[in-house]
Amino acid sequence: MRGVGAEPFGIPGPSGPGTTIRAGVTTITVMDWLERAAKLRQWSRDGVRAPHKPLLLLYALGRFQADAADELPYSAVEADLKQLLVEYGPPRGTTPAYPFHHLVSDGVWEVRTERGVGSPGTGVRELRASRATGRLAPDLRVALQREPSLLVRMARVLLDLHFPASLHQDLCDAVGLELELAETDALAAPGRRQRDRRMREMVLTAYEYQCAFCGYDGMIDSAPVGLEAAHVRWWAFDGPDEVDNGLCLCSLHHKLFDKGVLGIGDGHRVLVSQQFIGRSQAAREQVTALTGRPLMGPQPGLPPIAAAHRSWHTSQVFRGSPRSGPPELNRTGVSA
Image 1 (cartoon, rainbow, N blue to C red):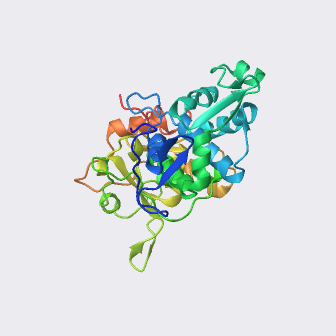
Image 2: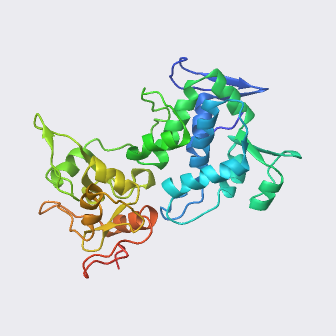
C-alpha cells in the first residue's frame, strides 16, 4: 500500500483522473483512502470472519454523512456497535472496545479523551471513565468534505469486501448510510479476484430454477423472478464461484440464509436457528417448517454443497443452535 506523502496518483471519477486531496503538508489521493479502507488490519485465520473494523468504519461514515462535526462517545458507540456485531458479525461474542481502539492504527480513525488525542487502550472501564470519543481521522474528514463521492466509494469497498450483496441495503439502513446508486469499482486492478459472471446461471440451472429450501419457481415472461444464486461460503471470504458453493434460493430464503436464520446440516437438510422467532402462520410455514427438510437439488450428475463450505457457513454465519429435526439430522451442521 502506498504511504501518505508518496507521489500522488488517482483513479477516474466524478472529479476526473488523478483526483488528489491535499490535507496539511501531505498529499493523499482518493485511491490512498480507498486502499486504506480495503486493507484494514484484521485478525484472520482460516476464513474466520472478523468484520469489527469494517462495521465501525461504516458506522462512522454514516454518522459523518448525518453530521460531519459529530464526535462519537464510546458509551454510544458501544451500544450501537454491539448491536451491529450481533446482527452482522460472526456468532461468537466480542467487545466493541477492540475496534474502537485498534482502528486508529489504520489511519482512518482517531480517539480522544479528556487528556487529548490518543486511546487509553482496549479496556472498557478506561474508555468509559476517560470519556473517550472517536471520529474519522482529521485528514479523512477533510477529504470527504472536498470529494463527496469518496464516502460512497469507501462504503462500497467495505460492503463488497466483507458482506454479501443481499445484506448491503440492510446494513446501510442500520448505520444510516445513503449511498448513490451509481456503480463504483474504484479498486479494480490487475490481479484482483473477479467474480465469475456465469455463477448465477450455473447455480440456477443446477437447481432447475427452484428454491432449494422451499421449491419456489416463479417466472415472468419465461424469466425467473425472485430467484437468486447464493454463496454458501461468502465470496468475500474466498468462497468460489462454483456449483458446490452455490444454492438457488428465493429472495426471502437467501436473506435468511445470509443472516444465519437458515443453514445446511449433514445429509443436506435444512437447519433453522433456535433464535428465530416467528409467531404468524406465514413465519411457521415459510421458516420453522423447513426444519430438517432435505434440500431440493442439485440435479443428478452435479456436485452438492461441499462439506467444507457447509462447515464454514455453520461456524461463521449460522446463529446459535439449530431447532430439533428428524433423528438422522446432525444438529451441529458440521461434517464429521
